[in-house]
Length: 432
Image (tube, rainbow, N blue to C red; front, side, top):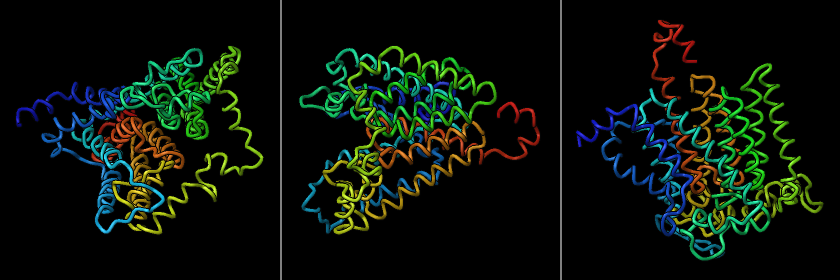
């Protein structure tokens, strides 16, 4: 055991980056067998091998891991008898709920136990590049999907290792919503939103590369017609491009974006895409629908089915919800998932998770990374109203690898001594 731990700790230039690269890349992998995805094998396999030897060296970021651990604990306590499921809703698959809550915890522990604080910036650069390029390539798949049916090739990414039965992605494709390797358009929207923000930060000094990758990401986000991306990710990406560049660079970025958009429009590609009318509908609300009902896809209006789920929880298991078993309903928001699994306690704890992420982002010393953390937190908090943005399938691994690395960056600011910067102003300027 001692020799293994020593091996891990004496390879700071290789192994931590390798682990981050594997975890990030695995999130874009297919189902391996049954309902087991590539990134689940990577995360839990790495945890089984590494955590027994390294968890003692973990330095967690308390404002994030504490409320998340509390959410898990509250969900477990919800299983304590007496339990009473609403007659209107059957229990859900407990293994899925366990994975949803424990995978983020395992990812945090892995990153915080293997990646030293001094390597957090390099690891974040690697993860950002991998996510941005992976999402851009998925956008290419979406473009190809407008010309030919890729379902035979992509089905292995959509669930059950290519088993029988129509998948969510196939039903969405019938409406022209093309999500590439992701089974749910909303899940693809989370990845595209994260990838776009990360691409702006990662390639900010390579503007041509940034414009190319952002163009593919934005096309992919439009093709999946995800409100999470179109009304959340896209505005934040554009806002981030604007605030992260100055003077002539802002004008150059806007000009490049305009040229790219004009090129796409002139190609006739969007007009030939079968989902173009579905996309256009997002900007013309139906006459018999209110704005909240229309733009939340019926999630948050007064007659929403999701509010009936809230009522069922408050009526029968208000404090701790139905526990890890949950209910056999669609969790159309992070708040629905939290209230079902852990009741009012879950809502409070989830709110503290997002507040912890905000606090974490604000604590990062490097101004560029701090802005990155703020934009990612804003995006995930907004996306939580339309999808469980912290726990949704393979997007969860991408989200938590990035958040865990940002947590290391926040810890770096706390562990550095003021005298270090005072003694070497030049060094401080170079690092900023």
